[in-house]
Image (cartoon, rainbow, N blue to C red; front, side, top):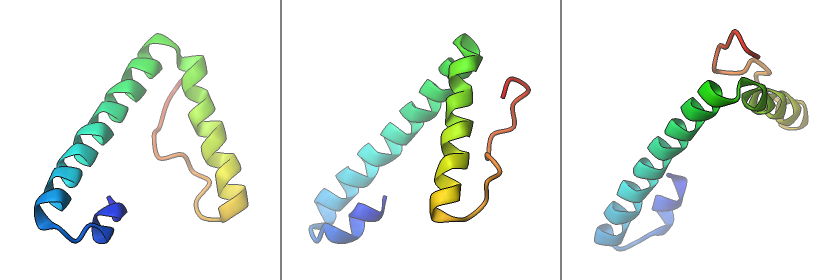
Length: 69
């Protein structure tokens, strides 16, 4: 939601924030479905997290604990 700081109009900023929150929720729902339907595909998120952490630093620990990953 960092883009909100670039939107000067308060009404537009509120709409953008609402959309952003909704889409982040949808992304969470997608992750849950992927975990349920295809745990082997879900493991790519963990791998991607670890690869990005090598490049940008920070924690290599994936924030979602999973018996499947």
